[in-house]
Length: 50
Image (cartoon, rainbow, N blue to C red; front, top):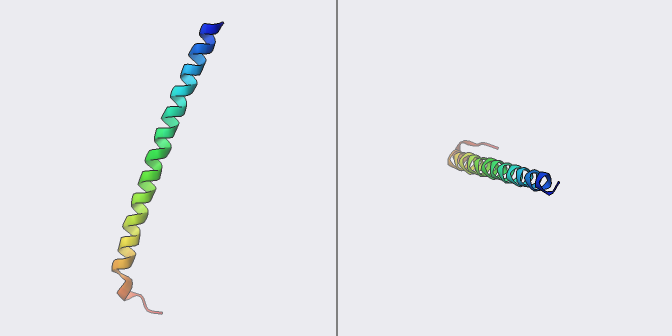
């Protein structure tokens, strides 16, 4: 009984770590894309007319 619980908790922990890494990578990618797009907008700022 205890062995089943131990294995189940091990899988649960590994899954949570994997999901955390995936979320971390997605956050970094979104941040980098936002910085690049912001830089492009600042570069083309002089072309915008109001």
